[in-house]
Image (cartoon, rainbow, N blue to C red; front, side):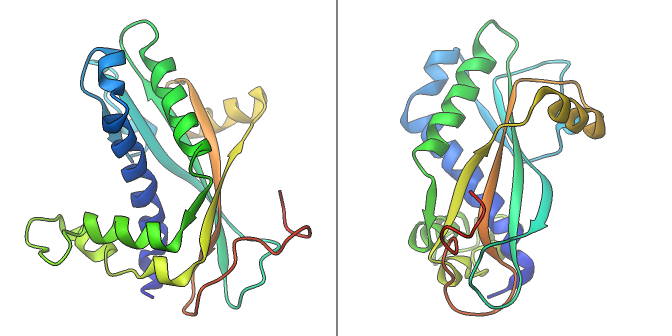
Length: 199
């Protein structure tokens, strides 16, 4: 596995999942316009001409606890933020993101492999962006049994400190933890160690 591509591969899989379900569920019709799904720091979002948008931002990385696997495994923490210029657009988008991730709490190795291969252009990589072509070679899907996706319910004080650290204007948002992310070579690893792992 190309370990240095692991973190970006997880972000790409989550972003692709949100993009695909936005289309398949007709969310654009509900908000009355095209929806952008991005993965950039919140302070990079253009608020001058706010359009319907979901943004996925990796804001923290910690060593995983409770995993029975060799080498280093990580937990990735994401902030998902919804934007919209009109009434209810942000709420609809945030609801979509929460529902989608609730339905995909376990990202299997097979799902990860299929997603990254498709993003990399499959057998023909000429049309894919260089970064996506690189991620398709990460082999993350073969290195995990599954990644676990769990919401993190931050209190108002913690959420306020997070947005203050980001130096960005607050927008409706939710946070998620992705567990079982391997950062070393090796075979497939379990998601959690069991009852001894963090919930």
